[in-house]
Length: 86
Image 1 (tube, rainbow, N blue to C red):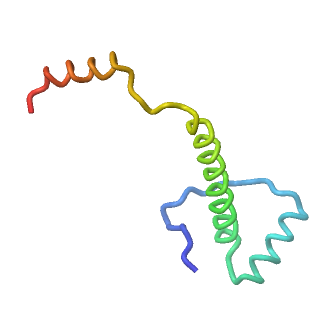
Image 2 (image 1 turned 180 degrees about the horizontal axis):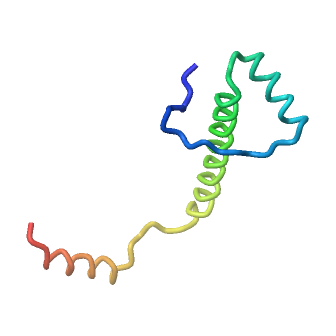
């Protein structure tokens, strides 16, 4: 199993309640993982799901917004490009 872990990772201390810690120990042993690998896998999954939710929310908001650029903004961009040497 490929884990996003390397020797350059940051060591972090986290307080976890005894029932969660014991369940994590059992699950890690069952899956053949170290606790570091289990926690890394769990956090990676949680973060990915959270980011998907953010993307869904943003898509919902921008679904009803126009993507058109205001003419004044377009003109300002054109004017600023005229001053650039290509």
